[in-house]
Image (spheres, rainbow, N blue to C red):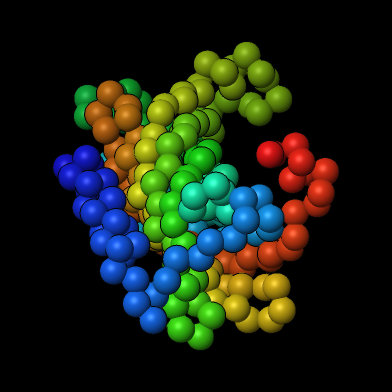
Length: 211
C-alpha cells in the first residue's frame, strides 16, 4: 500500500512537470542559493490500532529547506509526546508494557516546489529518516537507564506543504505528512503542521561547503 502511494505521487509529479500551465509552474532556483528555516506546531491526526494504546500530544517541528540541483531538499526534526492508555498493562499487540514516551523524528526530504497564484508555493516530496522513542520511565540524568529504554527505527514519509508570503521574507506554512515507521508491526502516522518560515540568501562560506 505504501509503495502504491509512492507510485501515485511520482506519477502526479511527472504529469505536473510535463503539463505545466500558466497557473502552475516549477521553480528553478540555483542549487543552495537560499535557505529557509522555520518552526511549526504539529499534531498527529490519524487513528489506528496504535492509538488504542497511546494518546498523541502536541509537538513542535523545526526545518531547514534549500533548493537542490533538481527540486528542493529539506531536513526536519519533529518532537512529540505520547501518553499511554492503561499504563503499565502488558499488551501482546503493543509488544510489551504500555508506557508514556517521547518521539523524535529526523527526516531528510526531497521534492519539487511549484508556484501558484498570489505567491503561494506548493511542495510535494518524499523522505527517509529515523524515529527514536524515549520512555518517560527512567530518569533523564541516568544515561545507562535511558539507553535501556530507547528504541530507534527506520522510517519513510510522504510530504506536502503550502507556503504563503505574509511579510517580506516571512511565510506561513501549512503541511501534511504521512509517516511509516518500520517497527516489528509497522506504524502509520499522519500529521498536520502549521507554522512560519524565514528565507534568506545562503552565506557564501556555507554555499561553497555544500557545493
